[in-house]
Image (cartoon, rainbow, N blue to C red; front, side, top):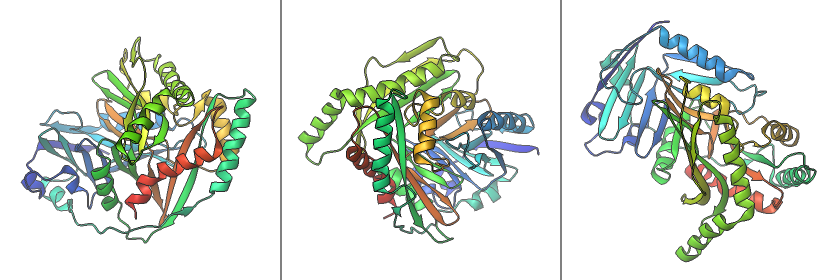
Length: 409
């Protein structure tokens, strides 16, 4: 299939926006989105979908994408990151997951970078493309209930994981639990995205093939061989009193348990990245960052890639990181499978966008939910190390559910 792609600059007025309107106001009738810091990409319709499952799913998708790019006719009058031919992607967490990993090429994409707006059309003319853009959307609330892993079961799971760590089988493992909510066939994701974007505008607001949320964690950003990532591991709840809140942030930084959990995540990423770069720069020490409901320990990683690897190939090497799996990775995945015994689907998998040149931005699909067959499934996970307390980890999971639960309330 030949994709005829045209990117051109547009005005807010052409899109139906008032001057000064937030970019997120476009969220309504769209089918895909990836936003951060009040800018990003929003897609409508579907010109082509690429799919894969199994242990080689990411490389298979990368190959399919390269084939699609080679058969495309692209006119790019914008020449910014995200213009031209792009796709939105979402990857299943596990090699063994029956969930399909996807790359979706919309018919229409609107992009924003700083003060520039552009329209990309794929096998559709401009007038028809603009007709697809509608802001109309009705918010529908949803009420979550415990899923397959109840609070009681999660406590038992954490206790089992601590036993595995005490036996020296693993050093860290990330265990998740799930919530479920039934919704109608007319349920629209986008009003929820708008609420998330307003409250978590520094996070990555994502929506790809029914998976949506607000992730605080950047897995991979590649732009002209420059790699960057932000690793989050180590969590504490925010305080209501400013003084107490700052004390919590400081205590998180000083916590041996959280510093240990964080180091596993950093070491895992750096080890996986070494095949692509001889120049890797990691923050000397982590820093505490504040989200509306949580403190996290964070470290930024930067590198110069020494090959023509696409961002998706780098994703393949880094996923799953210790931040969502554990250390050592293969043993941690075995423990997750044995203890959780639940398919995570695309939760904690890479989610983002990919350009024709291989550049792209990929977050980790956290703080969100998957819509499938009129059921919303939300997951939240915690890093378990030797010092972990099961009740404390359960409380942390509840805090991590809060963004998506509140957005649907």
